[in-house]
Length: 241
Image (tube, rainbow, N blue to C red; front, side):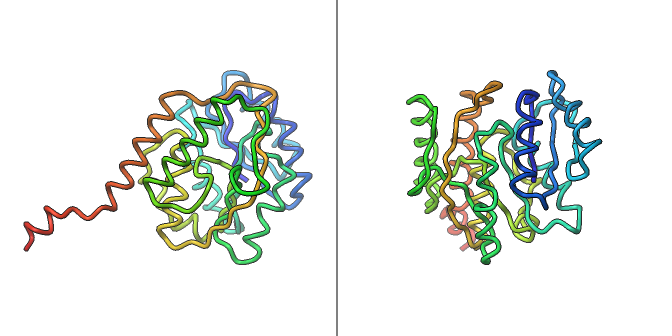
């Protein structure tokens, strides 16, 4: 389990306990980006008494993408790692869904996507504009990248180790939620077996959302860049002939 945190002191202890109750065999890595509210120190306190928890401290907030990349490299360096799950630390992703999310990997899938937009999935507690941004972002990315998956901006995913290890994490330039789109894009490009698992995404009850307009713009620009990189450049071919 890779759990990025920034100012999640109100949620951390509860979400860690819920994760380990749902998956007693899990090892959880908290990746804290220098939270000024003391989240990192609380994580250290929990890890000191809980052998299934570890903490990776980063000096400053750089965004979701760099935090996940650092956390993924940390867990992939451990040979005992078989699967890697990513999720939010604010209870927006229900820890009780973890066994369902991992089940497709047990059946041969390479990646399981927790999806709000397949039958049985949904959102709870969101205002209309959050739903519009989320739906619009996924529709835009699906259309531009020609992907069949119905929730490309979600961050509740389970990866088979071999697939995650094959993705060149250091080459990814996005820092915000565009990272979620890019990771699924590269998995698809590698021919991964990808399964969508319905989930209910709930608005956080404590702490503040990290979503900003800049993050949305970055994600849209990255989607366009990914599409551009895969379009054959006719002019180059003509010059070569």
